[in-house]
Amino acid sequence: MKKPVHKHLIIRAECNNAPTDQYAVEKWMRELIRDIGMLICKGPISAYVDEPGNRGLTCVTIIETSHVSMHVWDEVNPGLVQLDVYTCGPFDTKIVFDKLKKSFDPIKIQWKYLDREHDLKEVPIDK
Image (cartoon, rainbow, N blue to C red):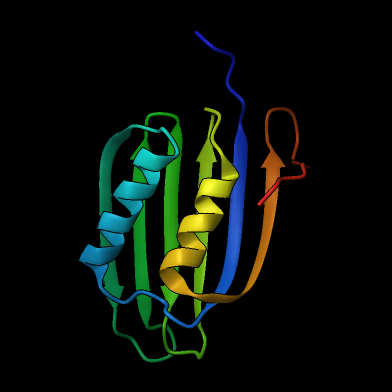
């Protein structure tokens, strides 16, 4: 068995094309997980909440090596997409950024990439 890598990618993106269709987001997440070489254990599971002030979509998937989640708030303009990829397996972060850019037309992207093996050490990435 390979030693776990405990990497956590956290993305906050303001997007012109923030998703609102839960089934489309589930498909997007399945494709992302496949593209980064992870295996799904459960999900994706999503729900759209139509509550003024908190309207948006949440989608979560349990993967063999941890989880992937997405939260979307579509009341604001541009829409806000928050993506969380936590895994003990290695993956190419560029694939995540490329898919996000291609799908949701972000105008601003912020991120943290953490090594969580012994503490919460921020590590550099190529995106």
